[in-house]
Image (cartoon, rainbow, N blue to C red; front, side, top):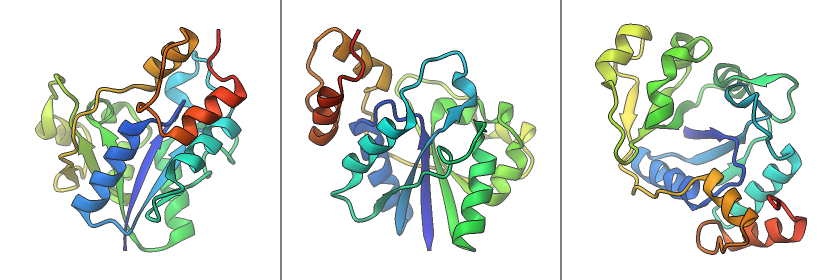
Length: 199
């Protein structure tokens, strides 16, 4: 089986995440896509992140209607910073010899040489890269020169470009603006009920 892994803070999950996951599932022939919310994102140590139980619950509500989507709490259940290479190692131990695709945006792909053990990561999984509007990439040639083993381990996913961000959603909620259609209805209801992202 081919399994997709989509990691992120998901603060909150939005329609862009779901569109990317579904497009990757169809295009790459994935049996399922695991949404892996970060516990303590090492790239966001200076940011206030909504408690994990809220982010996990929003994800569960967002993916409930898709039988191919599943929430994996491996990172939020683990203490300390969340590193993708450790998560992929844990998933391989848990799920066995399935083929994994780690789904990431163009911006994250460009930063891959800065990640923890990127050469080990590309040995454990293929990378499914989603282009970002207006973002020029140094490209695969640049990446393969700095990450050993990346050659032949990268696929591009032609997902529709949806310019929605979690930070924009948080700002809109704080300003009392509508987030309807930017997040699933169940997530919108949860944010309102819990009073999340209010000033």
